[in-house]
Every structure is written in C-alpha cells, then in structure tokens.
Length: 233
Image 1 (cartoon, rainbow, N blue to C red):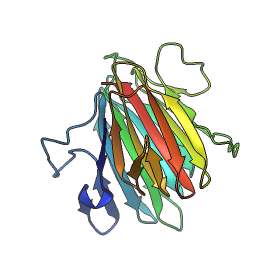
Image 2: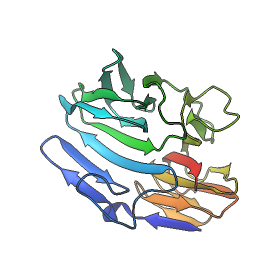
Image 3: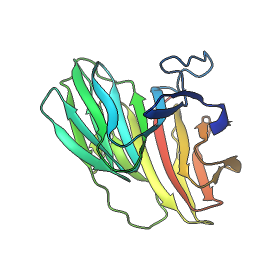
Image 4: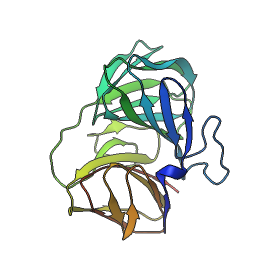
C-alpha cells in the first residue's frame, strides 16, 4: 500500500526567518492522523533565512538526522562539537541522555534542510554528533547515509535505531529498486523532481508512505533527488 501526502496539504509554520512544512504533527501543528510512520516521528522541510537559525535548545532520547538540500547548516552543541554540513551531506545527533544544540545558517543564501527525527531503539545512550560528506557517484542508486539496522556495513553514520536513511539522484527515465522487508515501512520524499513508486505518482516534496510491499520500484519521471527512511512499522 502506498499513501501520498501532497506537499500543499502539509502542516506549516512561518515567521520572519523560518518557513517550515511538517509532514507529521509538530509544534503547533497537530493532526491525529499524522503522528508519524513506525519509528519515524518527525519530517520537517525547513527553509532558514541567511544569518539566522535555531538558538540553543535541549533534546533527549531521539535520533535527529539533518539532510541539507541547499546551502549549509552550522551546528554547535553542549559537548563542544561544532561543524558545517553542506548541501547533499548529512549530520546525525544522538540526543540520548540529553544535549543542548544550536543550528545556524551562516551563509549568504537561504538554507533548506530536511530534519528527520527517529525514535531510538536504545534509551539512555551517551549523546553525540557526527557529520559526513558522501560521494556523488552519478549512478542510479540509493546510498545509506545513516544506518542503525543489524548488519549495517559501517559506511553510513550510525543510528541508535533500527532504521536507515537513504538518498540518491536519478535522471529522468532512470529506475532504482529498494527491498522492503516484512514488518518494515518506508517514507519517501523527492527533494526535487518527481517519481513513481510502484506506479504511484509522487511529486516534489510530497511524502509517500509505503507498507505491505516487498520492494520499491522508483522511476524518475523528471530529474529527481530522493530521501527515503526505512523503519520498523
């Protein structure tokens, strides 16, 4: 089964520096039918104005993944970590027993990110943060950016959750397939472009929940950049 949530039906929030769209209930946006997918609790599509950002604030017991779509985000936290993550790359923060962090757009252009929260499979872990640049191979494939599943090969950033975050770029007409094991669900968002997933149309920044399928067959109907989360259902 594939259910598509159109971008223009997402929840939202806007002020002088942040334009946010919420795939699931978050902050002042609450929809009891949109509380997450399996262990995936938050997927925010944020645009952050230059020279602004999220001032220091705390988190606990959550795996927080930031995929940068445009520009760059600069992170700093109470552990002394500081780093800049550019478009196409990813950072992972393990909130664990507690962490305070800030995220700023120090660039001269808007920064656009996907902020993804996944509930941890292990509680009480030591908090931490990491970022990684991923090679752009040009191949029609999905690359694991963060992975906490059993048997993860270590090439991706680790997660304290039975989940994985994939990303990839497809040219118009290219196809990629991704297995979906029993008991798992996937959530797919084209950051740009449009695709079909097992024949169902998913347009730019729409969200597609895939469950009860053994495979995702993704066909690009336009040049597309995709992010996919695979979690326990």
